[in-house]
Image (cartoon, rainbow, N blue to C red; front, side):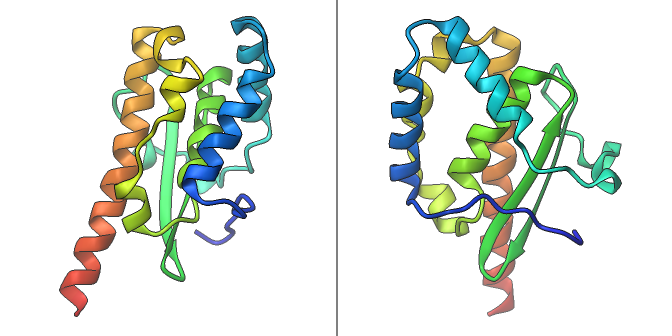
Length: 153
């Protein structure tokens, strides 16, 4: 990946989850929350076109999602994009929580914010499957990173 656009990571994973819960609590109904989610997706960094190929397309998502991650100085940096507005918003949430973290941090996280903001009950089954596919891809990348480090020792 030639250019890496990393979200400012001034917060721990737990703090970032609390921030997201607080942000979503400002909205009274799910129409406003969906609008906010879509707005977050619009602010995703540009995704390199060379990664918008089948090799980087996630399986298990109804919409098209391209995903990549790399290790930058011991931290995993993820980039993703979707052709669907709400899915792009979900990507933005996951990038805030997971990107620019160590593999160990990623694998030890308890994703409580998804339930607390109500995504578990307000997403369609196909979007839930896609969200879970993205989370699994992130965790799989972290597991591979740990395995790679173990073989290099």
